Length: 112
Image (cartoon, rainbow, N blue to C red; front, side, top):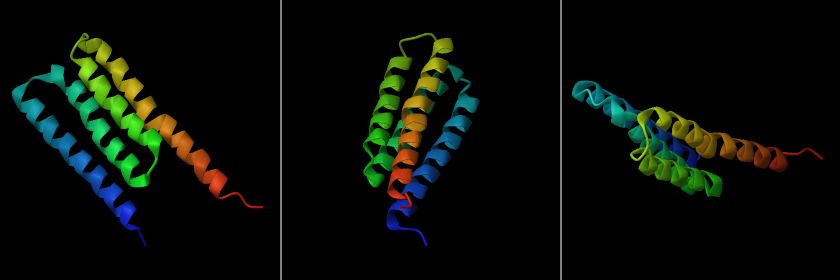
């Protein structure tokens, strides 16, 4: 049985996947590959931010904002270096919040 929050978070991530698929098709047809990493950064931020809001978990909210900031920054640097921004986004939006969520889960589920 899933809670309402879990269902919403699932739909948020499904919509992210659909958006990424559509953007990939558009980029492949327009042959404008330089912008794809900036769009990926932009799209990473949305489900991360919304998941943080739904879960009331501030590190995910901050991670989403970091992704959006990196997306804005990405248009000012050479495309090769945007890959470093993608790595930073993964760390800020998923890895750090993931470890924090895991630690919170372990603290809440300690057996006495």
